[in-house]
Image (cartoon, rainbow, N blue to C red):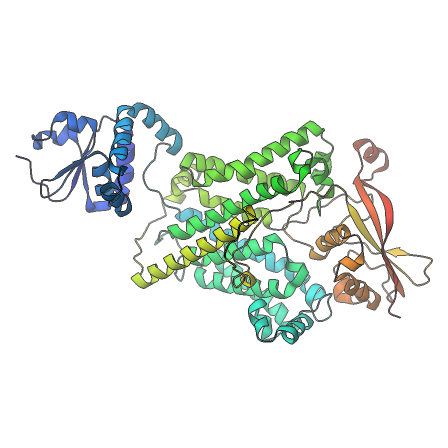
Length: 603
């Protein structure tokens, strides 16, 4: 007669390293609902169960003396309702799963080695409390950078005396679209579009960023930051149309649900982060990286024939001096670099969903790529934001191996039991976001497919498609703007960061983004001013000597009175070689292509 048990008991082989690994994980899943014991200690209490049964598979013994073994025992112990339904109702599922179980049981040494290789010495269910702590402060720092960077140039870009005034833009939207404009341009500036309000929104974003970094009111801060930044992006027009702007909005929106709903985020009473939104943030990282590789491979022959990096360092918007030196390396190095880039962007993202060790290796690979990009080009806060997303691949067990024990020992997990209605709402939002983001991702991968129209969500810029440098630019046209009072002597307007003087080294400006300098790069690619809607507004601002716009430039060659005439010439810029730089001290050489904008004046 079997011994009675007070609650379900799972009996396993304690001499099996593979069993020990997975029992450790199952204990975290089942908590105190199941007891565990090695058969070496309790087999004599159950004489009706043959010793060979204990040795070949786990045994689940219930209070009513029922005994289950193998796959059935595991599924019942873990209480996996979906797989249990499949086991009892789906034809062929039970025999197939039992056959797989027997195969694994017979080759336990091999699968034990595989487990150690993939998961390390810890297979138990882990937490991501420290990763969330780092990520939220990272998001806070990135919001801080974004608002600070924009604040110092907002007046010249979209202020009332700027290139594209926000109040004029909103007035035009309202005139053409009426009430529909409130949905298509979601912004707080509908309430007030004055310069003072522009500055207040930027200042408010900085304050909320600092509060978030300090760990206070994380959910409320993230809601405010997302709303403020969306408001600026909506009225920023072309100057806030970059992929990292919408990436920050999407990551920031998901962070609202990922953050702890507390007055202060501390280690002393830390709750586990939402698994659904942790995976949505990882899904965002996957879409970002995989799409970046996919669009290159699908759209441009230069990427497919591995010659793209022959041009990239020279033709990217704002290169660094490191990029100049990397450009000098031989072609075989650039081709190998392209192959490595494709491996990282198309292959490594799948490790995001892999076990711990592979996931950590994927994190290292993705961060390594971002550091290389950061060293050779100025891409605002894009690289930092991508790195922040990568850090969510590292669990607390891995952090413990990297950080001092004294620091990690301060984390005390408190079981948070949200209300049923809150849990249902969170799950519903997560499902909707996953569905919508999958549709957007599918649109990008399968252009011929007819997928549901999701235009109603797009104005909020929180579910997006990504993919930088789908088409590699093989030349570098540069616009040189000049002013004159007599149409004979012309003086050049120098920009702060974009190439101009040939002896000026490519500089470091990231994570700040000089948005006018960036848009000048795009404008040059369009051939002439007719294809760049804002360019004449910019030229007009120079003719009027608007101080807000002139502050966006390195210097003003007409400090007393504005010039009577301005023009824009188009040049092809190229990096010099090492010998030329050593002899002449120049980083660039250029060839004139023609006129980008003819001579204009206010008259």
